[in-house]
Length: 266
Image (cartoon, rainbow, N blue to C red; front, side, top):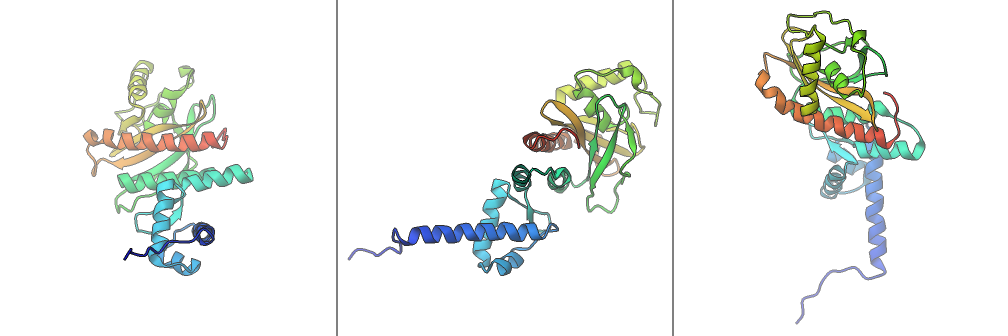
């Protein structure tokens, strides 16, 4: 006797597909309603779905970039969904896109991440957003303060990516004994930044702190940089290149998102 199979009839299949689509949409709505994150249990209760099915949907959404799982196991809206909403509604939630990508970077490297903005022909950049790590010992830098381009990783990442720049605009003042204070030394350092795709500074602006940064672009325009601040008491300088590869990858992801929604400045 042939074994019977529990398969849907042609009439039932579309109904089942629509039901699955509805569950996915309801899951996305549940994520959007709680920017701070939701647990699988909470989303399952809100959507009326089972936990196992909700888990599978969230895993698929995370693989597709429409959801992201945080370090504590909860789920939040992914950068791809934020980018899609910007295209549909004509809004540009730059910081929301950046925050999502920065959160992933912080979770991977365990250090505080900053987003800096840069305007053409300026001789400085400015931190506008920060995502902190959970480490008890961390170097927290204020937002809104002008940062010199010659001292620190974030400024060098920007300088190295500019097609032209008048270096006479820079006031090459020393912040520490490690600050680059000559044009020739700075230009030599920028060559290494271009080669690697990220900049490293060790106590160039703040003693006891290293920085790793990579430029953020929209199209071909330099709009800022993504940087990680690292206390030297926790990370050896020889380990900074590993962090640099991760910073570059996330800066490239942010650049792609900003390019996709046509951002000209952040």
